[in-house]
Image (tube, rainbow, N blue to C red):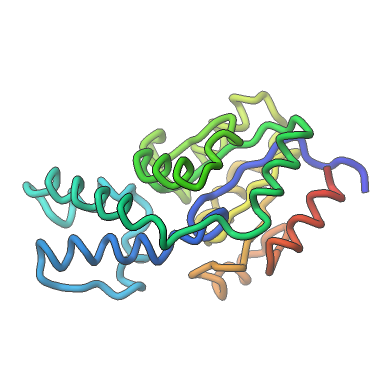
Length: 215
């Protein structure tokens, strides 16, 4: 197969890293402490879109600065429950060694993004990291994807976004890039399967084989 991509963009949670449970537990830590309640996973997922900071500001009002500090402290101190999915570091090394520009586009805020990427030792593989704090319009807007595409001077149709959510599919199609839907830990797997992504991958190994053939 001839080279079909000139650049790659990765989502973080549920795509690169198994951080979903850590996010759920972090939200429930502050919910129990400050609201004396617990959220279901689906309730927390329903909040996604804005960054953690914006969600917390909406939920906790005037207390939000203290709550945000507690959220990130818990997130960082309990990060051992998260990890990069086996095989993904090898993909990043392969792409880096072949001089592809690699970006991150995530709905996470910059603080939690850098905690995760740094603690897992993969921050060095990304040439540009665009978080929810770096855009006016969060996913499913394509603003973050377009920032990366324009930064590297790439043609959108030669860029592959790899993400696990419905919003990743919508943003990619709006930006004109190809979308590979990662299904190995997608909380919206059933919905994502209906979205008509260009590619679907059930395992990291499937993605790895595809990228090595297509690049």
